[in-house]
Length: 287
Image (cartoon, rainbow, N blue to C red; front, side):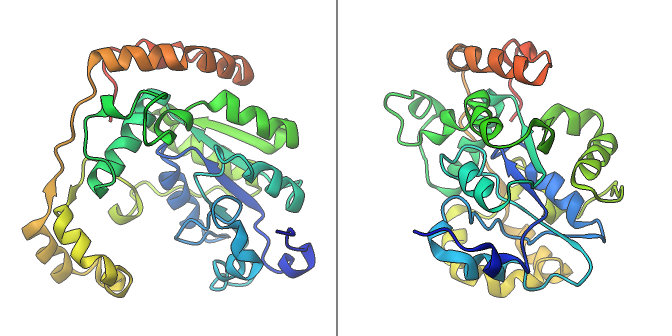
């Protein structure tokens, strides 16, 4: 497919991008930037430069149709980082765009990604069934955490100063400073919200409707979206929602994952100039 011309896209080109990684708290930074009155980011992830590129520029334009005048446009699609073609597509259309990359301990990330697909019903077996790269039906669980491998592709196409990398632990330990650093990188005024609405932040420990009920209600997801913050809706939902019981990640599997990621983590530490050895030596892996 011929890449869309910049003339057709010039009226709504994003001025910054959050490109991943999946399950690294990118939803949190996305919500923080959405709360900034000088910025506009669409709620859904466009995935335009990854899985939806064939849909063309008009598809992408629709995500920014509701943006008020005078704000800076941006978007978050967490699969861009690991996608084999996203970096080159973005570089061709937006060669100078500021990029935000958020990374998480790859073992935690893999298990969190597994948990997400488990509660969706996409996977049903124990983690061990999916964390063997040679046999897994979900290679993303392991491959998406090879951050140095993926970042090398981006550094080949963009100037290092365009890429701002933050870690999951930065968000946990220094949330305000982390948001302010991102604002500086994308050229936005500082804005930080201490308490974000619960629905705007993913939480794997939250209560969910049982999968059969979610499956039945799936066709009505968009029509009931405006009701989600109402007292009546949440009251009814609380009658049925339950905490999901996830199969645990065994110590043996953690150890094998640490071995799997050791070389890539060492490379990443050199690229970022940060000590990441704690990613592979923790006694327990947080979900």
